[in-house]
Image (cartoon, rainbow, N blue to C red; front, top):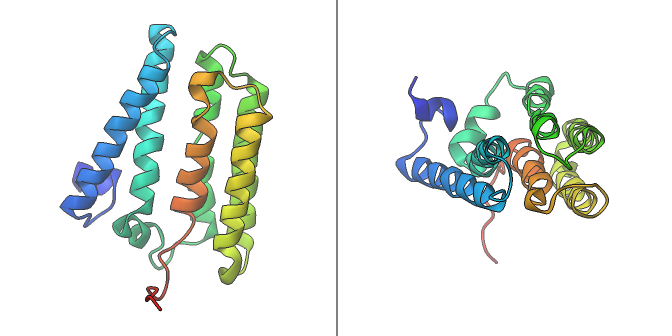
Length: 178
């Protein structure tokens, strides 16, 4: 298995790989630059989190990743485990002053609870429920929680990566215009 097979998905196209690696690199640079007035440790951790989340949001939206994560035999337990391993909020609480444990728990808990609701919903409602949870999660993470300004992107990007990009499979039938 190649590094691209592991980071994106088996059989990812060259275009998908280029897009995913580019998004990860630009996300890392963006996150690092936003944290530029912080300690070296904070900059490094925020840069790595940016690489994972910005890149992962794009990875999880690719057709190759959709096919891989939603292949036969994968069920809600697999998807919830994938969401649950995203403990970046606690990593940020550990190293970033002003990003508290309550904030980390609130973001992590909201994303996990939303994932349970999305994966429990009937197929026809999963997409609108995922979008509803994401827009409300964006409102909560950007206006109701104490988050340093250089990390205001974190909650929304995490929500997009996990609820919209990861949990939603490819549409069964492609939409045709008109």
